[in-house]
Image 1 (cartoon, rainbow, N blue to C red):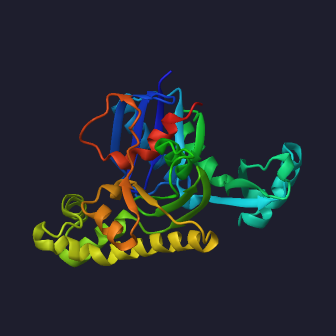
Image 2 (cartoon, rainbow, N blue to C red):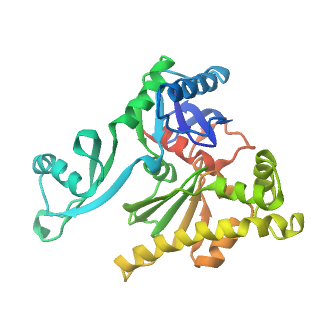
Image 3 (tube, helix red, strand yellow):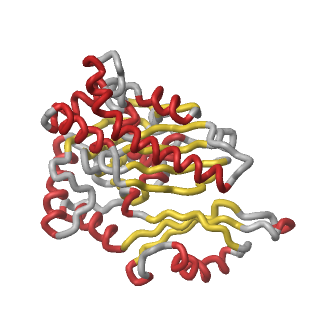
Length: 336
């Protein structure tokens, strides 16, 4: 049965329909500007406005409504990987709420919590701790998302965080080198460290691609539409537009790269024998001309751009921002 994956961002709404699974068959890829600039509504008026926009996306592009999958912005989520003494599944279920109180900064009565064991030592190695991933957010956030869908007669089949979706779209294995995933969205940048196919930490920063666009507006006197076009066309390429766009973008770009460096250093400080071998960029700004070379020069690690359609088939358009679709493809790679 065909599914629709939705990634509602502050800059745009992205949607992909197709047959889900380990090798999804894509039917349609859509990206529509989000004029509200809001990814998560905070009141009933915001719910109605976002519902109308999602309804137009589903209706105008004839997207399936029976299996609709949603992502939640990472800035709304608290994801922690904790180490605790080895417990059975039953013991962990009894202890998990107490653990969440220690690590998730959300009052228990407001908390929606999911957890997953990412490492459990063998019984012969009971001195080694087990590691558990906690994913918590306020119940109100989920309620708002569900309310948006109910407004248009849709019952979402699954809701998960952006980072988990992106990781699935990139199909990490134990053979992959230690990787820092950098997802640059419109209003935020999310960083996730994956070591031996295990998520180590997730960090979010409230600066993203729109910071770069604003820099062009202020420095070159462009309107918002022009700034977005110049950013996407010229980026950090010194040979384009006499290097003026690169010069205007550089302070904001350095700010983002500084946060990437901090994440790399954070991992190395905790794991002195390890190093971050690879950085993978996803999100709309991952396609910024020149950004791969700039980050490579600044950090020294291999830098790649996400290719979320690597094992997918079907109708994949040539003219799309492929790394921007990583969240949607991750939702489509998941078996419901």
